[in-house]
Length: 172
Image 1 (cartoon, helix red, strand yellow):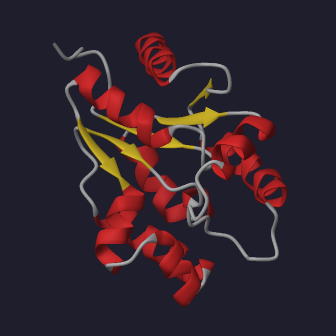
Image 2: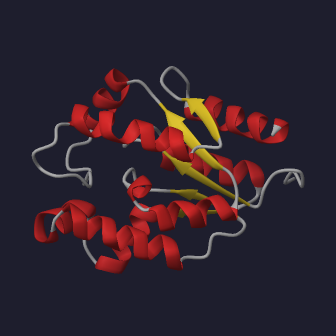
């Protein structure tokens, strides 16, 4: 049974590999809410994978599509799993913050690098000249800036992270 004390829209932000999609599905089930994966919304909108969008149109185009999607999709009664580059859009982040708490799923660089290297072709919206370490260093301060709550995912299962999110939301 859904907990009526919990917010009706929760956004998950963080680096690729932090577990946003996996944790988001679990949270949605646990809380009786819908689930939105904005990476999937982008792919449906563009009729292409994230990597194909990057290859064809570049990272700035992917970020523009991401912003457009986040400004248009319904957010209420949902867990929203965002793409890792959402924090580059102040307009999108403002909309997410107005809809409910923003949860930063944080992990250390080594863990994220291992997770991302296990699934190549993820479509990370960044300049080709930037290494994963560059992207990490650039984005972490942005995640921290926008987060209402930060949850460490490095040594936890998706279930443990989802439970930690719920506990923090109850205390907030």
